[in-house]
Every structure is written in C-alpha cells, then in structure tokens.
Length: 166
Image 1: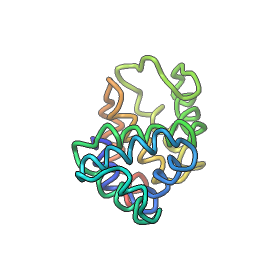
Image 2: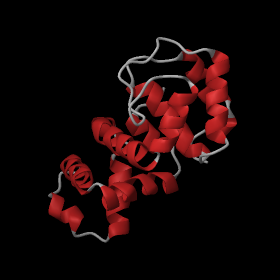
Image 3: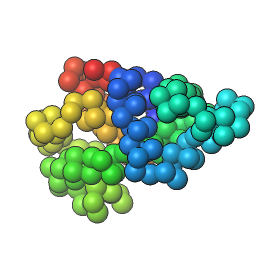
C-alpha cells in the first residue's frame, strides 16, 4: 500500500493542487502547519514561502510533501480533504459495507471484508465520484487504518479505474 507521501507523488498534479488549494481555502491552520513543515524541510524560514506567489508556493509544498519525512503532513492534508470535501463518499462507502460510523469516521473496522460486498461498494463509488479521488481514499483507507484488507489492495492494484495519476 502507498503511504501518504507516496500518494502525493503518484496522484496527478491537478489532484495534488486541488488538495492543497482546499487546505488553503478551508483550513488555514492546517495549511500553515504544512507550510511551516515544508519550510523546515527546505531549511528556509516560513516567511520566505509565504511571500512567494501562490502558484510557486503550492508547487513547492507539493514537491516537498512527497518526501518520507513529511508523511504525517501529507496524511493530514489528505485526511482533511477527504473528511471535509468528500465526506459523502466516505459515508456512502461505509454504509455500503454496513460499517457503523459517525460522519464517515470509524472507531473499529472488521478484520476482513467480503469480496462481493467490497466490489459492490467500490462500484457504487465509481458511479458517483471522480475515480482518482476514490483511489486516493481507498489507498488512504487501507493504509491509515489499523486493519488492512488484502482484497482491497488486490482491487486497487488490478482495477485500471482506481489507478493514480489519471
């Protein structure tokens, strides 16, 4: 499975920019935390990045969050984007799997999931949401939770609709 910094590296530049722009517009504290972490990783002061034109600033942040040391920052950006912008997708997926949740957030996951049930849930998402956003969610879902479903990993590896970078 892909870690958060790897997800940023494999997703399309447009989607990476969408995630970062979403944080900039709707979650200023998260965006500033990411900017500070990037400044530290690049050994510059945060004000240096803050004074750059927005497009250059975003490009610098995106290029830097692909580094392993910034996996936590990359994960925070992805989680915030999914939980706020794509809450409906999370809710639809968990409802289709009959997993109890609160607004798309799960306390405990089953150790495994039935293949047929998982396939139906993923197909329902593909009919309703952008495929690359689904791919990011499902990779993050399998990587960021304590339980990893091998059948979900197999599906992500085999289904061309769930490939990143599209």
